[in-house]
Length: 571
Ligand SMILES: [Zn+2]
Image 1 (spheres, helix red, strand yellow):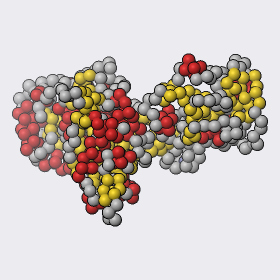
Image 2 (cartoon, protein in one colour):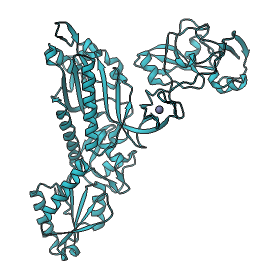
Image 3 (spheres, protein in one colour):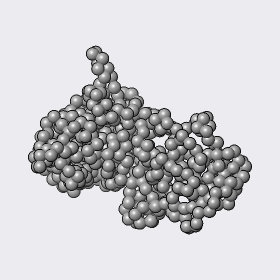
């Protein structure tokens, strides 16, 4: 490719709205262009990278036994009603009405369509297992698109669905996919961490994320350096300390004027926050919910949303709290009626808690569950924090930020049952197909690679996915032999199948070198009057400072050897 003909321009400065490093560099390198919030075009250079990533993914999916197909973007809305997931997806699901007044959804994911399809074709256990995948555009009405390609509304995704006869089969498919993902990231020279994840709106059981640890990431990862436990903060657990066991004492009202927060109450009464119970109020799909948790802990809203199985969860306003018959700041689970109470299991870790008396200026001492109050739901809804104890080994947990570049789910029979997707086992008995779902967002993966691999001059592409392998950079084109020699090298390299970007622009060395660094092409070849004098060309790897001179004679053969070695060492 001739740089002079290349569509897209490099920019000296990133536009002010570009927040993340990958967003800035991809815009500056002319690889992507923004059309609207969370909607991007890939320009030729960016598209070449994306196609290479796509090929790596496709090869690994095929190697794992996946069959590629293509499902529609336009999906009958009835399928989303059938699965019930139009509720959990809520406003993230784009819908439209066609000329016959039928509602259609624009696919944010394809579990519904593919389960409906498999339901119509698969009848016997002999047809299982099945691994079906596609690489296709998805649409999601993200509330907060951000970070360039990191969180967008239209994106290309590889989604594979596994269909098995039983849980053991699912485990095997899950294992196979996890291995395929590990292979993909290795081929892209991208270090990832596998963490336990929340299944979110997709629903299901086991779920893991592949995370690239980087400052710019929006996911929070809780991990233990001692035993390797790692989980998304939305899902992370921790060992809740038990208080020194004491016998339950009898309930006692105490005046606590001017004490509303847990700190004020614990200070006033003279007990640690862990000896108090905190009340927090939410609205869950229009229903008022009273949450009670130990005073030293915070509510994890993702865990709470999952426990309540609700689509919308928001904190209740003060007037809603009063309307529910509670005294804000002094609310109590003791003696309340007609309100749903959800408790974190931390309230069972001790005795004799201080809790509100539901009376202005008063608290109760020695509150004990279940003696003094009942709850509708008791589970883990607490947020794990830095310094909490690891659930596996009790060491201190730490927190890092990262980008999710892959997600694997064990769906189980949750969706197949809704679609009647069943098969006859070898006893002739009908059973629901056991499903898994496995996704990789290609654009986010591309952005994560840039977040991970760059310097202050620009992008450093791993060799396997660089838009071109070689940046051919002749200098001082007005000097007689430079341009014709460069043209000749360009033709020879192309003939040898080497991907080369030929900077044939009549620009200064500074401009050309800056662009070469910004675009991040692995090998730069500089031809100048000086190198020409010694019948050589200067070679410089993007990752190294030193240069070396290669003789022009047999240049193609030498280069091919050099590039093949590099490719081998990186894969
Ligand atoms: Zn641990």
